[in-house]
Length: 106
Image: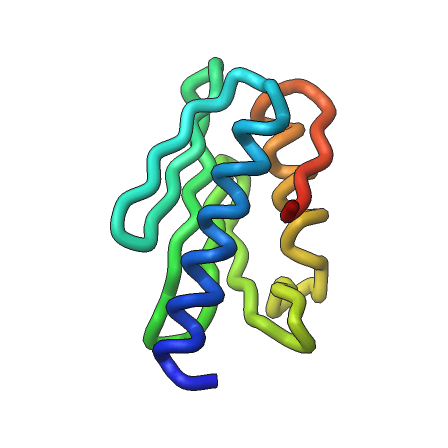
C-alpha cells in the first residue's frame, strides 16, 4: 500500500469512528483535527486515535494503555494481541463511557 492509499483508508476509518460515536446516542464528545481524533467522556477521560503515516498504522491511547493497529486483509488489527480494531474500540469506549456499546463501521 502506498502513502496515498494509506491516507485515504485511515481518513475513512477516522470518519467512520465519528459516525459510529454519533449513531451510538451516548454522550461522547469528539474532535477530529489533522489525522487525530479525540473522544472525551463525561468523566473527562479520553481515547485518542491518530494516524501514524510513516508506519502506516493507527495508534489508539486509552486511559489504560496504548495500541498500534495495522491493516491486514482489509481489517485493522492490534500488532500485539491481534484483536480487531472495532472490537477493541467498542470495549475501550464502553469502559470509559461506563456503558455498554458496540461500535462498527457503517
